[in-house]
Length: 378
Image (cartoon, rainbow, N blue to C red; front, side, top):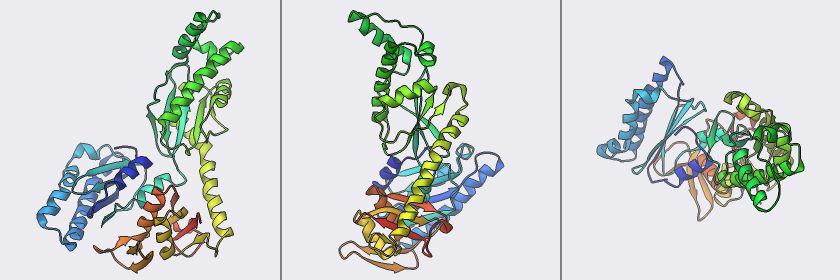
């Protein structure tokens, strides 16, 4: 799979088993270096075998668990079509992988819960947003982040103005009104009459309904692309709660996909940065109160009980231990064992599943001497 969404992460977490294997490695997009990925994965699988042996699994069980991953190692075509990172998830029932535009450090984790912290960096400051291309010939909806742009289906919606207006004009004529089905170029670039403006407005109401049916995350920003007068009409029809005021102006069909994506990202970039900056300011304002914490033995229980609003973690840091959900107590340990869990991942998973926000950032971006901080809902 080439694009991972928050729903994909939820699906992965739904498949946790007592033995859940998570493997991350950097990959190369092309050239001879792309073949280094198969060597990295093979080495990580050897580490995984050792971890599974230490947990008491038999040789046959380990061989069965890892067989699909070893098949991937030998698939030369697979390694020739990569992005920047590969995430692999394995249990005795599933084998999933994702190619993502994030450079991972090499890591393998065997636990009773999939390790997802490296994936969450894809939604940190380079977060998810949607782009709606308003063109006379083909309305398109894209799901994006800083690195990727992928068209998604616009459900139950006419895909062009001319298609929708043809039926709209037909209805008007049947009602005894006059109308014209003149070309959609006129409608786009010179909406001269109130009648035509109303037709376009009604069409955009249909498009807006389709957008709301098609997107998974209504909190994610929506960016419009189109000529100026069309953007203005769509904004009046819009019901999306997080429509960006600024849009990509001009005919989107005149732009290469990478240019369109870059222009849209430039619009939402400051939005994501401001969100993170606001969280940091909020943390500083309420530091040393019961609204914030930088202690993992407070963060893990708060996350489990749905109290964490924002969790900020330093990338490449782990803290192993145990959490007792009956006593809400945390016990810290220095290494991975069958009984231990990775507590930062545990906290991130529970924050994510209770609709909190998780930020994975370089340690220097966290204003404390701890590699994790949290703001609490209550």
